[in-house]
Image (cartoon, rainbow, N blue to C red; front, top):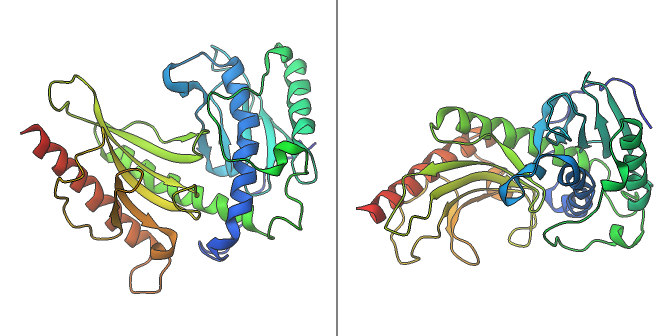
Length: 296
């Protein structure tokens, strides 16, 4: 258990490690995230669509942090630190109490969280590891230890933390400039971080329209990190779509604009920041244009 203040250490630039090596670390962190999200689900004020289990990125700790575990803003929160994988209790005074995950089993981490909740006068028996969804299986759920050196390449959790840091900064900029954008949140179901931009209602169905602008560290569609802009509801696949400055359109399984890590880090004149800015700007405008055409 660690109580010491968090020290920020300057890291190598984004892409210092090959994206192919991030896959197992990403899967383990996804399962570790459920330990934290389940705490929010057990204690935070319920919201529609499991929104009370969503998390925010806290850059000074390289961590995903829940909402307060209760109705008061003074209630403690839970966190998953990515770069040096740990679960944590965040007290109202800003104190962090951490448990490193490396070498520990899932039940051990859950038991530690439950014990810390009891110390903070939360009803620890209410902490349940139930999820309203299924995520891809990993042997950590069968009892193997988290982040064994033989399974996870050195530095890969830290590299994933850099991707979340990079994405959060860029997505916050989108959220700030878009009038109808939500805060940037991480979905524990998909392990993606995104802002939702509301669009004018289309048609007579009464269904709200929006676009998600976000980053996934990898999933069944693309095993390595990628950025996306996806409209909802899904548009007619026959609707012509404008060209993008970067990235490409995808329609297999889900519809939207995609910029993969391989393209983002490809050698060229443009930096990753410039490429991402080009992609997000053109993709958001393209989705908005297509939406307006369906309304007219």
